[in-house]
Length: 369
Ligand SMILES: Cc1ncc(COP(=O)(O)O)c(C=O)c1O
Image 1 (cartoon, protein in one colour):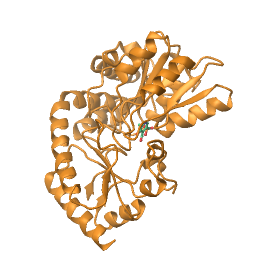
Image 2 (cartoon, helix red, strand yellow; image 1 turned 45 degrees about the vertical axis):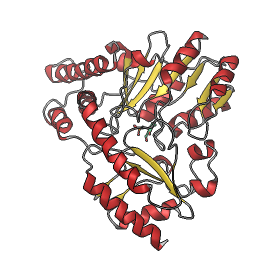
Image 3 (tube, protein in one colour; image 1 turned 180 degrees about the vertical axis):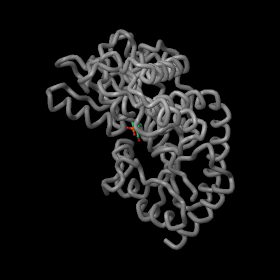
């Protein structure tokens, strides 16, 4: 199979799996247990926390391990003070939009930040939000559909000058571009392991000490009391290893992905009626979202599947629902055009031969209409 859906999930890296296996097979103790088996597990969790902290430029105590990006985003939004307003960008992942709508029902004022036709937050939106002075602003670092990268460090500077807290969902950015908490200047940041060749069901919320974390899951007091539940030790160890590899191999992975993306976009440019969404903006090196006039994206996805090629139509989490992508709608793309969208998201093991094969199959399917 040609797998071009790495923004949905990635295959686990063998080195990550090797690091995890002892904690599934041998050291399976509960990290809260006082005997040796438990202590070994607890020290593995602490080692992973230290590993992640060093890579992200924070102290270990600034990391809460979660069940993934979704939980990290929910936990971030839960820090909102009673009655304070909330602002989120119109292109956020559902795991930010949905808790934001839930907070709105609980009478927090909710503002959506507009984006331009390339999917970049507008200056006007930032100016407006500064006037409104919400308790928290959430803007993703990189978008899962278009790959557009926002200038978070600049927004963080501006918002913090007005005493407004900022959260960024860096789930798609980690492993593809540099992600250093201290350099971004944000107050809260969400991460997920399975987008970076780590196991599914693991992520983290990174927070500045000035933020009061309010636990969403209550129970046994694990994770400094911020997130109850027996730690997913093997997954946390795997996440630590995956983050380490993402950082040490970043330059190499990025160069490889950019090279493939260039080849892909060159091939796509020869197809009449084809648009690359957010084509003029700075994007992740692995992501291309495209549409072809008069073609149904979901249909094309199924036809490519028959050729053993896996791509996505818009956001993986939203597939199955036939509504056009809210991200593209926020960018002012017509519903008809948005329904033609497919997303190609490349990974470190993809090759030039796979890109050539994809272009060949895509051209032939589009010609057949
Ligand atoms: C931008 C973004 N945020 C959050 C998530 C959710 O992460 P997880 O699958 O770990 O819950 C995703 C997953 O697709 C994502 O793309």
